[in-house]
Image (cartoon, rainbow, N blue to C red; front, side, top):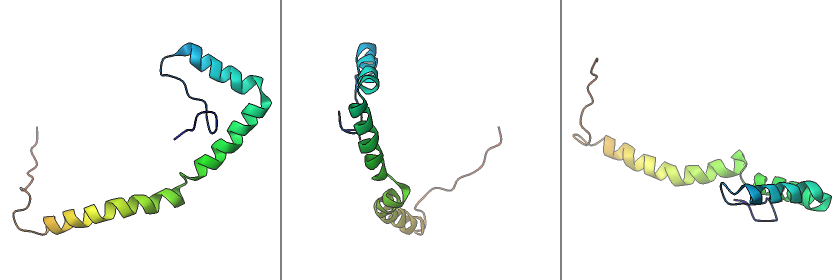
Amino acid sequence: MLEQGKSGLLYEVGNVPQLADCIHAALADGVVRDGLITRGRLRSEEFAQDRVLPMLEECYLPARRAVALQDDQPGSRPAVTAVNA
C-alpha cells in the first residue's frame, strides 16, 4: 500500500489533472522525487517474496489441511466425470 507523499503520490482514477499534478511534483522537485524513490524502495522490501510467502503459507496451509481431511471422508465430494463435447 502506498502512503501519500511518502512512498508514492496518489490520485483518483480517471482524474487526469491530478495525475498531471503528481507527475509534475515528482519531476519538478528533486528532493520530493528522491524521497519518493528511497521510501518507495524501502516500502517495497516489505513485500519481498521471502517476507510474504511465510505469511501466506501461514494463512493457507491450515485451510488446505482442512480440505485434505474433508477429501479423505467417503462421499465428501461428488465424483467428477469427464464429458467430451
